[in-house]
Image 1 (tube, rainbow, N blue to C red):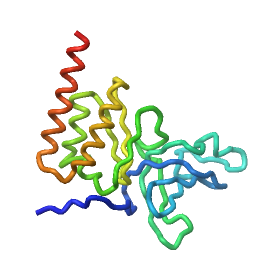
Image 2: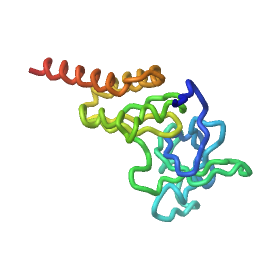
Image 3: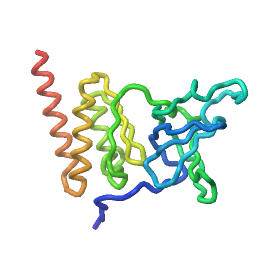
Length: 188
């Protein structure tokens, strides 16, 4: 028997992929809101592959307040002012531009991803959408047809609400297939 929590806060772990908002700019990096009780910091040396001269570069030119980033946690140490340290120095990580962002409860992340990615793969296979689920409960949706993003966002919120029910993956597949069929009928 599997126990699925109905709600919970995000507890950072090294290696997690998270989606965060830039909330402040310091002298050597950015403070990032990762929807956690712990503060996160993105040092400038983890934000870019090339060295940055802090005496000549305005950090706002790289990332500004309100920008959204897809990052990986590389350190979690409660003795620091900013317990969580982030990096953008990997493929796919960096500033998020375009698409739709949805927030879900962090305890529902595994259900939204599905076993071996089964749930998010429905959106890529059926609608040509890329769904990136941060372990902190933020979901970034990018679709070939931007009109599909609000539909996918609604389905993700449905998965969050009904995460405790059985047969959910089949129901979601059916909802997405019906949506695609209605969309095709309208075009013809």
